[in-house]
Image (cartoon, rainbow, N blue to C red; front, side, top):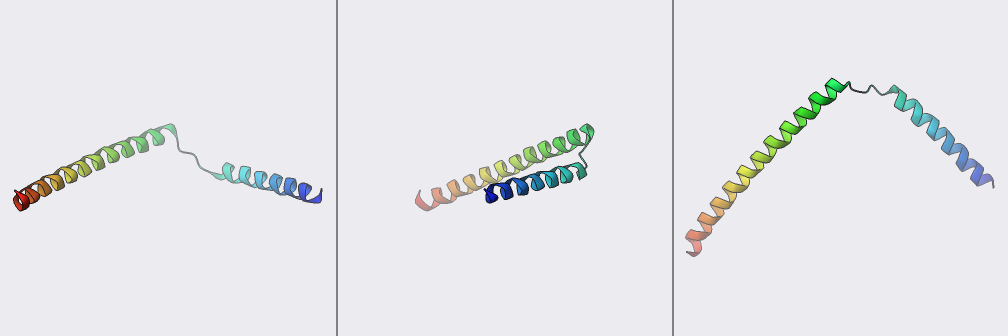
Length: 71
C-alpha cells in the first residue's frame, strides 16, 4: 500500500512540475507560426526539387554509363 501512495505522490509532483514548466514557455504568435510554416514549406519544396534533380542526373549518368558498358 505504501508503494501505491508513493507512486501517486511522485506522479502528482511530476504533474505540478510539468505544469510549471509549460507556463514558462513563450508560445509563438499566429503571425510567427504562419511565417515559419511558410518557410518550412518552401524549404521542403526546394529540397524536394534538388533531390529530384540529383536523382534524375544520377539515373541519366547510370543509364549512359551502363549503356556504353553493356551496349
